[in-house]
Length: 325
Image (cartoon, rainbow, N blue to C red; front, side, top):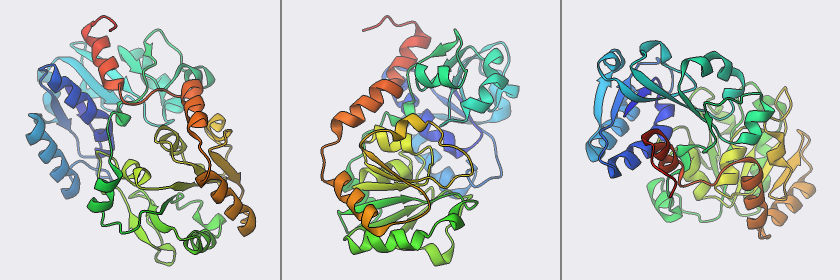
């Protein structure tokens, strides 16, 4: 199996497929391209992770130009890297968060199979095709142990709140320090996660701050496993929160409507705008952390998403023509 890696961001989608492929005796190859961005797979941290994983899983590493010499099943994300492929490649596309809602039309005619999050959202965003397989995302085919995460990142507290930091564009629209203050007054240790392209201003660094410290498992997923509650700012990380069953306080501060708005309409999520009322926020946190929300998470997953943990198996069964088990 071939994997087009134009950015380290894609490793979290590809590595579970490689692990499943190894169980079936399938050789995997990574074809790397330098994106010259914060998520470049040629940066030292990403290189270390790629090399370590490849050694442990017998993965070949190539430059992207070498893909022409390796026909067959080839995975890519949102059509990224299609220009390097030929008709000798069976092209399998994976979707990235909600990017497919904009990009799908650019690649669907050029690929052979598209792995979609769910039929519901494909219909909503007009991205239906006979080429679609509604299996979900292999990104979630990983088991993350809370205690392992606490040890890995030297997190001393077992009562943690994950703040999924907003984009730099939106951070000034809300008093984030006020949210920090309330969470700390309630005894929470702050885990603040951002992306490399959205650095946290010095004035808003508090608790323990993280960027993309690990691509597989991805840092956000690890920190969710260690957290009791997540603070979101209308990020598509709402999907990660649901699939990992972490309750959410969401502040709607983006300059456009909620993406995948259906996912916010369950009891595991409390919605706020940019005006922070401490009393209401404290009540919401107490309710979310003291209520059994499993049924609500399961309902959201069943209605709008997918059951995580078995997606890589479904994908490989599909492309290898394995009959349903």
